Amino acid sequence: MRQQQAQRATPAPQPRLTPTTTRGGTPPRAQPAAGTAQITTSFNSSVTDGYIMVRVGGDVIAHENLYQETGRFLLKRRVPRNVNVSREITPKSADVDIWVIIPSMNIQEHRTLRGNFLPGSSHHLVVSFDPQNKTFNYRMN
Image (cartoon, rainbow, N blue to C red; front, side):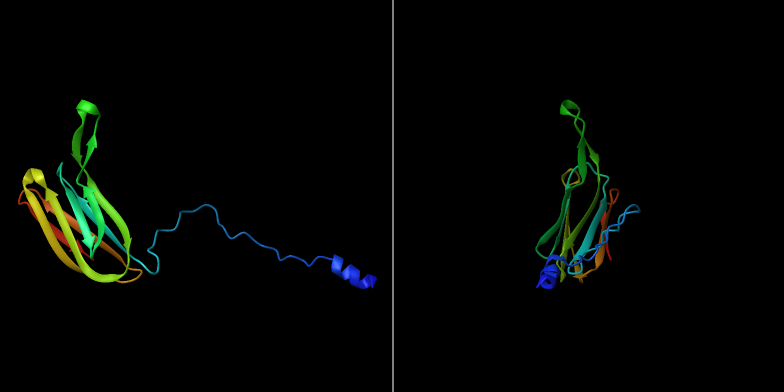
């Protein structure tokens, strides 16, 4: 009977846990999740008004001003701004609608591209503008 009581009083050994975190080094690059696709929109602006809007299917991916305001109060002014926006979307095959509106140049540009966004893929949309000819160039990979 005492032998049975001694066995009950002895606790079972616990497994030893080792830490799994690492320290130092550079953080890993952000990759889209396995179930999502990623799209990055880039536009190097040389104008001081207007905006760009990008939609994939019914989802708004980017809606950004082409300028930024600097200064304060009476010294406030607008300067050109480079747009670079990344978003994750659900995988789909959809139209990519791009609007660029620049009121000072009387420009209202709209273009539709076809896109196939597979799970885990990363796409880059580059929009460039030639102010001399008022023409746009669209490139998507």
